[in-house]
Length: 380
Image 1 (cartoon, rainbow, N blue to C red):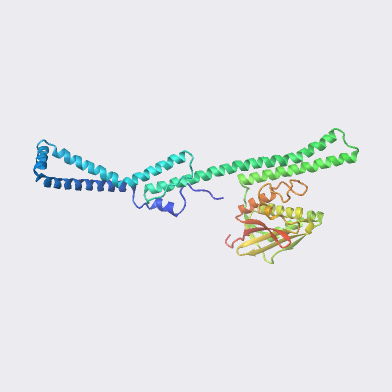
Image 2: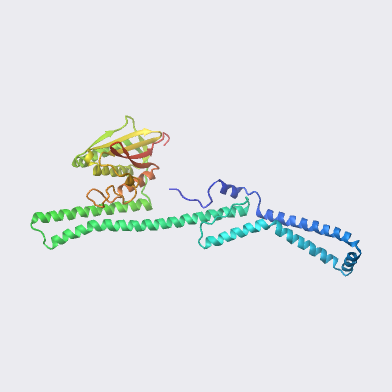
């Protein structure tokens, strides 16, 4: 699972952080220096113009009056200050406008508008601030969306679990009430009621076990103890162990393994859980097809294992969501043919933990569940 870094990601963020073109302090020093040069130069120009104006009789008398009464120096300083402030505001106008833009964006983000973005201008501290502000807004929006999705997912989980727990529990209570009220004809009917209640109780326990396993994997993740696993040998052993289940369903398996070993780096206990789920799924839904094909091959640094059945094809609309939790192959929520709808979700979680992929697709007249795991390298 990837973890988000606190430092902005991407080449631009790194470039802004490590290689600023110009520090903002140097930019303001240049603005101040430029304003001072303009003020001094402007003041000298005004003095030069004053010498010219002094030659005009009326204006010359006025300037001489100001000079004799001590107004020359204050007027010169005042002109210089006005020129300095004017040039400073003029030169720094774009920078001050950019600061105002960033300030407004901060206020809008604080008000809840997380779609606001500030254009990144320059490679100084202000440009980096704008980039970080955009990144912060995007991260906040993503975090809030994930929180909303988690809340919606939690509500869906509670709704699904409530329904799935209530269905077998209602049946158990119903048959036990019949037994407790002596509402049965003979001992054969009594045993029949007890057997049904027992089967429903086992379904309930299986659902609770699957739910506990799924929530454990989704939150903390399963304990992962990788080692070298001969995937062909593992599939061969599992096929033999599933033989009684397949025979009970009137089915048989066909094993197709490569002549050479196919080793992967994986947790064998977790892989067993994956292929147990896939084989159980094939036995449950592929009875009409008689055969379950178990295949393995090595291709382009990948071990590709397939479990296929020849039962009724899964509708394409449901095939795309088959690995989501509480999704069953059958449209109804009956448990006569299906479980809790968590087995394939658990399998997907385990495969992704091994940095592999799992998918389901139709191939001719069969439904194939394919697991791809990286082959073990010689150095491993």
